[in-house]
Amino acid sequence: MQPSEYTGSEWKELAKELTPRQLRNALKRSYRAEAKKALGIARKYLGTSGLQVQGNKSDWDKGIRSHIYSRGGGFMITVKAHRANLKGQGEKSMHENRKGFKKPVLMWAEEGTKERQRGGKKIRIKHGIYGTHRSGKTQYWTETIRKDGIPTGQMGAYGFLERATPEMFQTVEHDLGTEVGVAVEKVAKKCGFV
Image: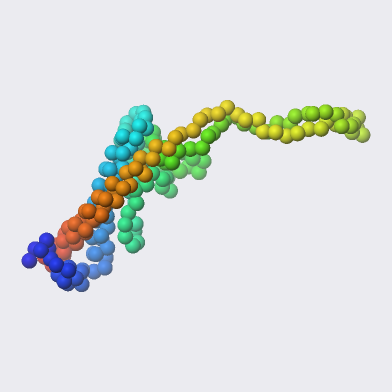
């Protein structure tokens, strides 16, 4: 009997023959296959988001990553920075922060940024004389205010990943069962059960 013809009872019998590690690896294989499809969808939405890309577009595509959970099950598509230090790679889609980690610019493009400014500082303003110090110096009534700097603008939220999410969910719901079956079948063939 071919695995494509299996019913629930045959799958249960096969699952009893496989070790937990083999089953976990089969699940991870199916999650990787689905994550690859979801990455393609997210990159398609990035391309149609209107975000202007300078240089090589593949550098920006690398900013969208998939993460397969090591325990439990599932995966995540994200534009958030990972903690691995990517120093020396020189990708244009990355920005190095103070701690030496590099963050994808897509992280800010997805959610947008707050209004920022350059060169703001606190200044003290003298308002008037209110007396003299015993040393003879004139004392002024002062007020400290914040002088705004030059506004450098803000990045609007492009929301490409948010718009891609419904289509990614739909693809995963439709294809994950098939992918798990194929992955388990591969493991069973490798172990000689099929």
